[in-house]
Length: 257
Ligand SMILES: NC(=O)c1ccc[n+]([C@@H]2O[C@H](COP(=O)([O-])OP(=O)(O)OC[C@H]3O[C@@H](n4cnc5c(N)ncnc54)[C@H](O)[C@@H]3O)[C@@H](O)[C@H]2O)c1
Image (cartoon, rainbow, N blue to C red; front, side):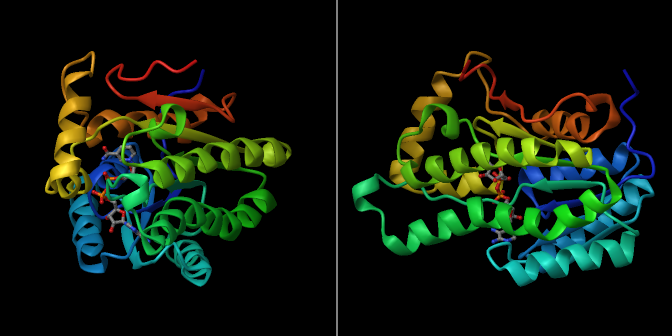
C-alpha cells in the first residue's frame, strides 16, 4: 500500500469556505495538495484559502461558485486548471438542509435541497470528468450523509437527494473505472458546523438533533477533523484499489451494512 501523501496533487473542493469543507481543504493541503475552493460565500472562501495557504505553504485559491448552476461548475473547473495546472481530486461537499416535517416543507425548499445536494454533484462531475478521463487519472469523493442510508426525521427530500448521490457515485465508479477514475462516498453523521448550528437555532431542529445526539454510541458530535482524514485517504494513492464505496463517519450512530 502506498503512503498517504498528496504531494503534487491538485484538488477542487466545493463548499470549502467553512464547516466540513474547510476541514477537508486543510487536510488535503497538509497532505501536500494545492486546492481550489468553489463556494458561493465568496469572501469567507477567500479568507479560508488565504489562511490555509499561509499555514501549509500550498497554493490554495477560491472561486465564487454556485454549484446549482452548470456554468459555475464549468467555470470552477477552468479556474482550477488555469490556476493549479489540472485537477486530480474533486470533493463534492457543498450541501444544505433545513429540518422540516415533509408535509410542512415547501416546493421552493425541495428545489433548493435537490439543486445543491444532488444537481450540484452532477454539475461538477459533468464538468470535471472529461478532464480526468482524458488524463486517465482522478479521484472523486462525494459527501453524502448517513440520512441517505437510514433516513432522518425532518429530512425527507434531503435524505432522498443524498441517497441519489450514493447511487450516482456508484454508477460513475463503474463507468469510469476504465479511465482510472475512482469515485467514493463519505457519509457523515452529526457534525458540529455552522449548518448544524443553523438547524439547531429552530425549535424542531433543536429537538430532533438533541434526541439523535443522545443516541450516538461514541457520545459526542463529530467535528470536521473527524471527516477530513477519510476524504484525504480516499483521494490518495493509498486508496487506489477502492472505488464505488460508501463509508459512514458518525460515532457509530449508524452501522449500516
Ligand atoms: N453537519 C452535519 O451534521 C452533516 C451531516 C451529514 C452530512 N453533511 C453534509 O456535509 C456537507 C458540509 O456540510 P456542513 O455541515 O459543513 O455545512 P456548512 O453550511 O457549514 O458548509 C457548507 C458550505 O457549502 C457552501 N454551499 C452551500 N450551498 C452552496 C452552493 N449552492 N454552491 C456552492 N457552495 C455552497 C456553503 O457556503 C458553505 O461554505 C454538506 O454536503 C452536508 O449536507 C453535514
